[in-house]
Amino acid sequence: MADFDYLLGMGQMLVEGGDVQGNLGRAERIVCEAAERGCRIVVLPECLDLGWTFPGARELAQPIPGPQSDAICRAASQAGVYVVAGLTERAGDRLYNAAVLVSPAGEVLLKHRKINELVVAHDVYATGDSLSVVETPLGTIAVNICADNFPESLALAHSQARMGGQILVSPCAWAVDADHDNARQPYGGLWLGSYTTLAQLYDMTVVGVSNVGWLRAGPWQGRKCIGCSLAMGPGGQVLAQGPYGEAAEALIVVPIRTRPPVGRGTALAELLRARGYQGP
Image (tube, rainbow, N blue to C red; front, top):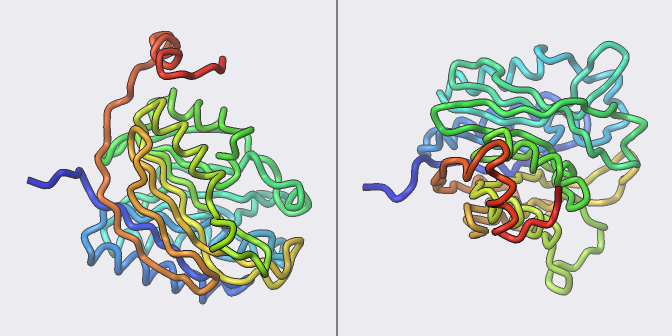
């Protein structure tokens, strides 16, 4: 008997700024490969269609639903898996850094718009205004995006855990300076801290998936996205970590064991205090 509930694929893919068809094609191939390897859900990076803060986003971004999200929906339907994907969303005269959770039938079950966007991206993206979770046969899934899980903004994920989230999946774009030396200064301590906090307090599984590749335009031009995608299991156990590097494309398959929510409503306060939580 398997000691896990299902397999999750972390699709650490190359994202090239503005290359919509190339990026979507890579996403579709990863979804197909993950399904072939037995995954039931695939998590892809942040703004995978255009790249994070791509200067041409205002011209190339599409609504959700729209051509870019339709491509992700087709890939999910053809492979018969859940897909979480970061996309650039046009909504009237605003752009959002968004993510969708798509069902194996190709339906968008949930859309999240990033709330804790970096200051350098404020000229591109508007601020999201809602949090949600959705119940699925894989458990109750929460979706947020990258810096939504910074230590100083972790109240967002706390709220999703209190909504009953059993697994939190987070498309990301983790970037470092061009000359970053990972041997001397290993990447990922910030995420390990935040993800461990959530996993230990709520018995959540937390998964962040970053792209790889150079940022060739925009406010962080010259930096590189380096993968290091991270899956943290209930209690704070590292389940898997992707390879580091601007060329480190990988599909990492992770066994997931979901646990029921540790509590709900007012009953959570005492439990969280017993687990060391000092917040409100």
